[in-house]
Image (cartoon, rainbow, N blue to C red; front, side, top):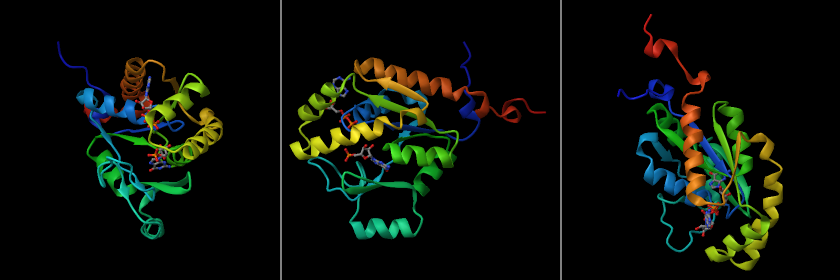
Amino acid sequence: MPKTRMNSESGKGMLILISGPSGSGKGTVCKLLLDNNPDLNLTLSISATTRPPRAGEIDSRDYFFLSEKEFQTRIDKGDFLEWAPIYGYHYGTPLSNVLQLIEQGKNVILEIDVQGGVSVKKKFAGSVLIFLLTPSREILYKRLAERKTESQQEIDKRIMWADTELGYISSYDYVLINDNLEETVARVRSIIMAEQSRSSRFKLADCWKQ
Ligand code: ADP
Ligand code: 5GP
């Protein structure tokens, strides 16, 4: 059977934003999605941050780890698509990388916070915004505690900020409750598949030469 062509094959890539409270599963879901769906032509944007690396994190793979001074210089030069202060540090999406990847036709995943999500949507109206949530606050707390990457004080900060983040849900296109991991990944895949066929992404001239 001939392969079904999707609209984004004829044009530029999409921006797919995944946000949600720390511990909602963004990193885990994105990793599974990227590892197991080569047909979706996905790639992850690597952010810059002033937060110190966690055990096992590698510069330029997990984040571009910058000093506050370096980060400020990048802001001044307009190097970021968006940036935001989070948990006492700064995080930002390098603009040139994202533009290059979209031009190459890649579907770029941005795992960024709600402030960044809203800011990107204003600049790229066609971005797809997905909000990830745990089934409850208790489960969020449990997953953060079991992840063992933050101190108790850091966990409390993240849970408190989660309430502010929930206030942004209405700005998002989709909300997923990350209960069963495989199902969540399958749903994100379905969203991406459907978005690729959105009529607003369709360019008639690309396939029906006139
Ligand atoms: P985030 O990137 O949003 O901060 P993580 O991807 O690090 O969140 O997930 C937080 C923790 O929850 C990790 O230990 C991860 O293994 C676990 N986790 C993620 N999704 C699920 C799920 N559906 N069920 C149970 N545990 C999960
Ligand atoms: P962490 O320190 O746990 O890696 O990330 C903390 C928060 O920063 C998460 O909500 C994550 O989505 C967000 N984040 C990571 N990179 C960026 C970015 O480039 N921009 C914005 N606005 N948020 C980011």
